[in-house]
Image (cartoon, rainbow over all chains, first blue to last red; front, side):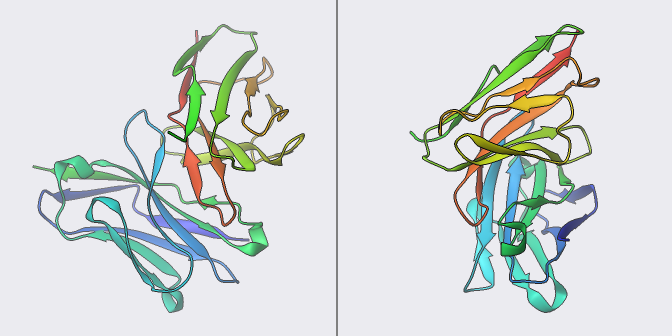
Length: 114
Length: 111
């Protein structure tokens, strides 16, 4: 069965520092991979997605992620953190074996220190 | 503007009551989903529907019911059988390949 592991329920970085949120997945067939962001008391918003093609994917708000098949990873990065990036981030995977149902990671809360 | 509308944003339920959460979408998506979110537990799937007049249980369907009479609408009823309904509920819709679009959520509190 597919699964998604997000390393670290909380990640704290200083404003201006690199943001790295880790996501590893298990899937025996080519996956579609997603990162979503959730601000308090709001719904989830798509940050970026990988379906096919270029493995480095750029999203909104300066975020990007790289699909590494050999490492079964899809880590999310941003070169310089802003206070407005403080939110919860969710990684998700889908593939044809799950009939493209999204399988979710547990989420990582990003804390930005001034 | 296309999107998903959940209402109400806040809902209070007395013990033993059924309450219904509304979810409407105008994105022309076939699939719709209900998730429950508790602090530190991510998203858990309650029910989903891939076509009108058909729906399937998710991981935590007990104490909940849904209907899908129209493509645009997928209401969720939290019944009195749900013993711990206080949570944040999210509705989503999707096209093929899984990309989901979310509503703004309904926060349900038992009083």
